[in-house]
Length: 207
Image 1 (cartoon, rainbow, N blue to C red):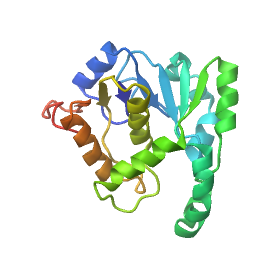
Image 2: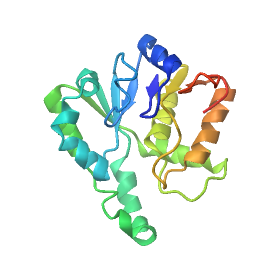
Image 3: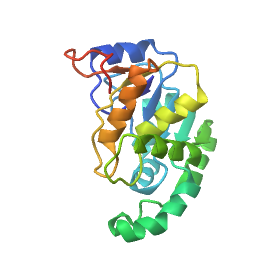
């Protein structure tokens, strides 16, 4: 079960409560609406989100973060180091976007007795390739949610994946419309079930 930070809905909350393995994101903002286990917290380990989490005692003491046995850093430092020069030209306003806090998350995990996993840049590149097939608008990087879906597919090739709290909207430089289309293909193939926030949608209709 991959739990985004959007609205959850009753079906999604019930699925989280019954899940065998639960992944949450960053500040775990949907935790109260989707109580249940927390096995992994996937974090943006570069830029302002990383800095904010690491400097926050509230984040460190969050129930989901405490419960999780593993932290997944979704941004390979080598990939983001390579992006820095390009972004300096195309998006100078993102001057701290590639600042790397992977080592700091590693220290946090060592101190907290957690496993730290850095998602390999090959996953990021596979997502870029998959998104190209649905003709995305110009973007900077895929969302953390899309990277985690791809990592779960790679790490657990026979697992059925359920999603809740995925609104496919947010930061303007993530390719959310294309990501929605890509997840639709996974739903159509029977690999993913999507739970909507409202009962007016069927979980079989896509992302």
